[in-house]
Image 1 (cartoon, rainbow, N blue to C red):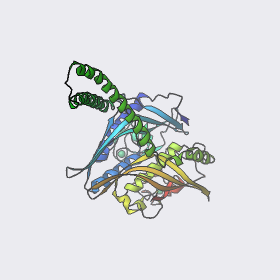
Image 2: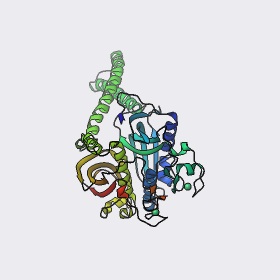
Image 3: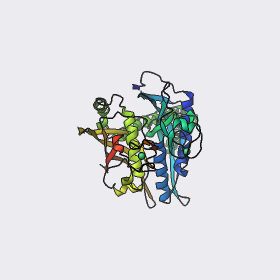
Image 4: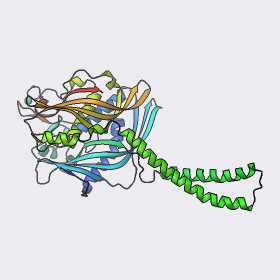
Length: 423
Ligand SMILES: [Zn+2]
Ligand SMILES: [Zn+2]
């Protein structure tokens, strides 16, 4: 595990290209339900459910990402490894424009200036994953990495290792109150022009109101007033940006302060029985489980969810973005299990009939996993191995093993969600 505060980790060019392709196709994956390249299966599945939720409400979403600084510089914020995989958390300034339509008529639109955080995971060099199972990015069926390279036994698609790894295993946006690239220029120009024009006009108006003639002196004074106005406009707009940074920044983080310190605390506790434990990995998993539960037609049908019926309000969620904070409110260890209660922050878009509302929300989410099994970063419910007959299959598509008919107990492998509710 390493945090890239002092070191400057560079992402390989091949990774950058995959990230770019992921970012460029995210909008059409949400809008049209198209397959998204280089995304891991959990992300693809959540995106597919989200698309179905929006379409099921008779709505259409235009979801567009735009590069805010145009410098295409990805910053690597953190990296971590287990025995087989290495992951990098990257950030770049990307904005999001959303528009919700019904029958071509606009119901809602917004534009957010964000930082986009992505996690990209690769097989460690020197590790030969040929016998590992993977779910086909095209049809979702499961085979080994070696098999799929000579053609998926189910759909025939052939893959190169480069198509399979590295892949994007997480993404979210954090609203940015600062400015990137040229974003301040239009506002600044307007402020400078208006202020200068107002000050010069006041000078002339004042002269007229006092009943004095407009003479050479007035014109000379206006020549001094003009640069002064430009200067005041410049300082004024700069102060506005600064005040906005402080006010909006503190409003955004309201309530999230409680999560600071959680991370160290949580990591220390988890590493007692899982030395490879990574907070980033857990967070990606938690976000993915929460999103899938919210977008699923019936959460109780999901393999990883063991709670009661979800609050019906979740049925109106059409878009949700992880708000950048997940706090630990309780940590218990009992009967060979660890039970973690979290506060998770999300920016959520609701559609109730034609009324679209955007809310910043906080959920209580309880997760549980066994403590005697090490965390497997490559684990996904889309490619599980049946403990009864040893066959591999996609548990999202099949609740029972298609080979022997036995039910899979996901609790013996991975985190499960046992409660999701509004705070
Ligand atoms: Zn296939
Ligand atoms: Zn089986």
